[in-house]
Length: 219
Image (tube, rainbow, N blue to C red; front, side, top):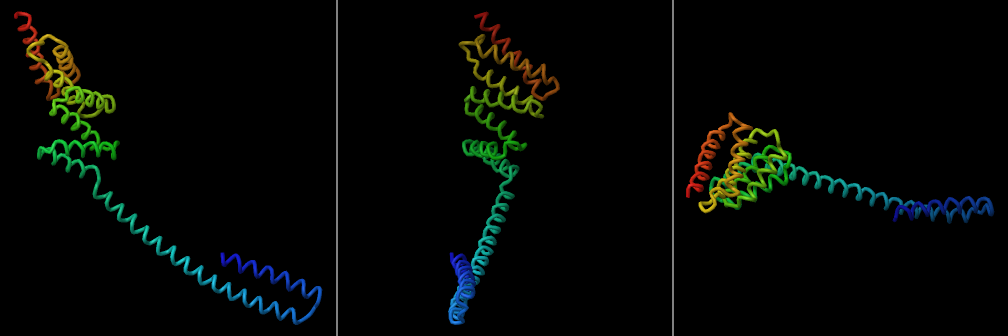
């Protein structure tokens, strides 16, 4: 504001000088103008000081923001996905299941494209299985299969779907819905991943399922 006032004063004074010299040619008026002009220059110096102070303030703020950005970058480096995953796995190993599940969900949300996010999704599905929330676990592993169809642990996802179905077989309904679903799911593991470490257990589970069905029909 002061800067614009000074510029305004200078322009007005220049116009006034031109007018006085052309119209009157009186030196007295010219001296009055010089006094006014000196006052304008004084204001300009004050503006100059304010301008320097303004630049200095910007410099200080810039340094402060730079420091905050560096601190933020340092915190990001500390909280990278592999460290977060190791922390979540440690909580899981310590049987702090609920807290571990929260951490795995956080990794999946913040770093969705990382390998740790995929492993976290698998752990979330396994925790649902441990909680005997079988339908949620099945849904989670189906999501993993759809999102990551070429992942190295895809055999585990198929196996866990089969295991979730198997766990829902009960003695009163040995040849029911989950018996059939488990049978189909374990067959998928064997057919899709014959060399998998889960293929052998799947084969054993199939034998048990067939035995259950036979026993039910005999009764």
